Image: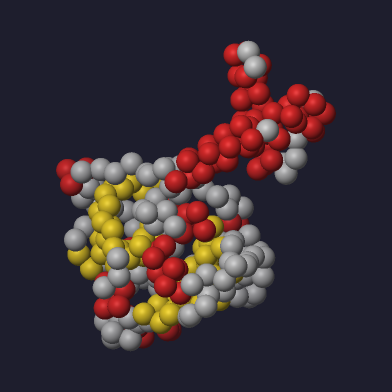
Length: 258
Ligand SMILES: Nc1nc2c(c(=O)[nH]1)N[C@H]1C(S)=C(S)[C@@H](COP(=O)(O)O)O[C@H]1N2
Ligand SMILES: [Mo]
């Protein structure tokens, strides 16, 4: 193959993978026999798979202590009024248990001490909110991947849902409770942690005490605070209004990559 056809094939493969993701199909490519041949070749497949995979696995940028924001802005719920949450908070979260259930072999129920004893990671990262502000903080937490390995995902598992303790919107249909979901690639990403500490201190209530998600390749609204339960599911259509998260149910993208 000459260099120019090689490069055209490469470009088509790139467009096709975008098309496949966005539209589910790409008429132009399937109408062009050369494009199809390249896409079906082992080389074309490998390259497309590699690009999707490598990009999703790349680490988010990490910063230094000097970069930490002196006043990281709290946003959304900052002091949940939900009865169950208030009771837990009043008792200093001594009775808190994180439940991991759904499509797992062995459901888990973990205290904060249990969580602090899990494989952990500390990272200084930048939080970007869609509203247009950013703040940098140091987060420490249990890595989600090893926890899910302990619970043992069933073969049908596809998404990890985070059920939160706060109602952000009072609505008659009860869909105002905050929740979020991520896929298994992000769940196993090394920087995906259940944070219990912020800037070397116990996670404050305003930032999601006692436990909040850090999924560093995505925007602020994916960073679920006040996590009460992690449910492993095959699909999230039956939850909330069916779009995989509180803000997704109100029009935001499910995959909020940065
Ligand atoms: N449970 C819960 N998680 C949440 C929210 C919320 O209101 N409730 N707000 C989201 C949004 S939009 C942002 S920008 C971040 C804010 O996190 P922070 O309060 O630590 O800045 O939390 C996200 N996670
Ligand atoms: Mo946000």
